[in-house]
Length: 441
Image (cartoon, rainbow, N blue to C red; front, side):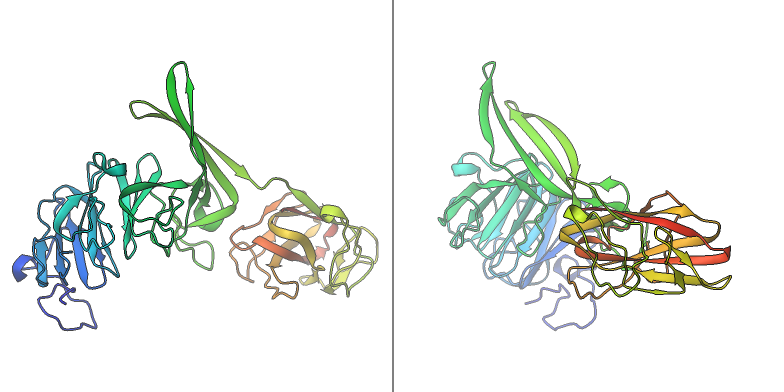
């Protein structure tokens, strides 16, 4: 259908540059490009939109149904900030810099939002709720096969078109030719209404109230937050990036932190006035796993625990070149310059949990004490011991009474965990009296 824009209908197995209008030169100064099932559209830096490819429903916006092998300008549309093409049933939508929404092409289910089911060969402005006025302050728009949704700058979301499966979110299965508000869902620039994308926020139902003769609307929404450096460090509002397996990666790496939630409370009143307040909350409690005796020897698979992990355990799983016969004392029997290792029993947190930190207490002497953590949602593992960068080659290492903060990118939302301690003898073995793990359900 010519959706590659190279003035042909030949399939290409390597990239080709999109031609200019009428095939003259190449399309330049492109700020955004998007594809439908058989057509493509782009926005240039001057705010004009161009489309090419299949045009059987008028989705190119050039007032025809003739396919185009090179770009044609979308008519009657200027100041475009964002454009989308919808795969499946062919139509297109765009947002202007002023926050207006326009759609054109197939309209079999009312997905253009103009209170009709007539296909449109040029853009029509999306009407407001109930067909009153026009939808305003639109910050994002997206669509499915027969329905379209948009988010406005206040965080509210609206949909229109086909609704046979409840996809408009208004509590019915009735189609809508103009926008209806999604019940109990809010959004922001980080919400993607594409059905395959993750939902980032959930909003409560709004409540109307009055005070001092004024009407107010209040609601709050809860969202996952992100942290820089693959889940470790400061909270950020940036959207998640692909985090490399081996941390650290680049300075801009971002990952979701499901142990922290962001709650935003909004109050709105006349004249588009509003007030917002944001709070961050973390897991509701921190608990301690404390082992101070290993004299029971090896061979134990699970810790013996009381409520919330209070240890009544004096055994472990396995060891190599370690001395543990004296209660409350863990040392290495390895030669000078060598290390001994001890692998703990499995700790069952009885819930989906996070390992926050590990610390030891004792005497360092002339040596080194370091740790790795393994976690799993299966009591049989696999048990992949990892250091701060997520590999077996690094360790958490700090002096006595200094917590080692665990990298949550690798030990979060797991039920089972265990530790491995390595003690280096550099002439006088360190003595470990306690190993303390801070964790949160």
